[in-house]
Amino acid sequence: MRLMIFSDVHGNLEALKAVLAHSEQHRVHRRICLGDLVGYGPYPEECIQLVRSLPGCRVIAGNHDVATLWKTSPYGMSSVASKVILWTMEQISEESKQYLAELPDRLDIAEMNFSHANPYNPQAWRYVFDRKHALRCFTATKSRYLFIGHSHRPLLITRNNALDMDIQPVPGTIRFKLSDTRRRIFNCGSVGQPRDRDPRSCYVIFDTRQHQVEYYRTPYDMTETLRAAQQVGLPAMIGTRLKKGL
Ligand SMILES: [Fe+2]
Image (cartoon, rainbow, N blue to C red; front, side):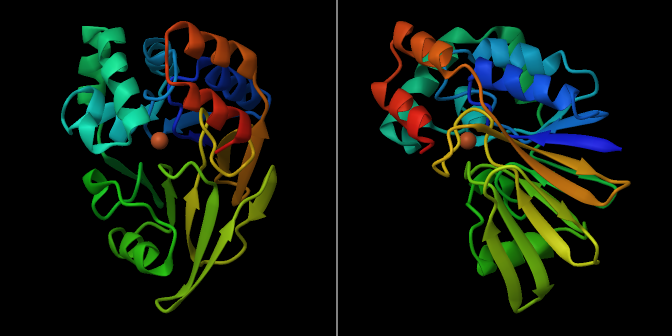
């Protein structure tokens, strides 16, 4: 099976369309979205509807998704993020709110675990950048492969033993052959707002038969996203970050 895993769409419809079109050319059988369909971007409702229309696509709740429902307070986020969440609340349909409300906060499928921020305390939204938090992730599940998003920075963490882990950023389009039994955490980056200084969209394909994880970076029509963001009055900082990949 070739499984597409993507995260942090953040209302960026052009980026979402680009990664879906790109994945079509790479023989994807199933898709999983790790959350944050909304927030920051100008097309929250359209992104929810497009992801809902994908056959069999499983979706996990992200912190922006739950903030849009007032399950958590948007005022606990950065001022730019909270401003857009308050705007997003007015843009999405009751049906879409119901859809977001029913999203799980983690999934375990075969030897894979999927969560937005981490599997050990998914609703606390802690980032996983270091050994201490990676260890908590590995302890929270028996799965060999863990897939997360949230930080918007593609990252691979390989567990050598409880005390020793390799932590490496994942630059650009790259393939990892999983030729040993070590457990791994894959941060799948962000479709709609990358923050690793590469403004191209990021997503992952896990080929379970070939034991291979493929990271892809795809360009998209950012001009349209920037135009729409400006038109609906989103903070200018969002455009600046998109252009720089920050
Ligand atoms: Fe996010």
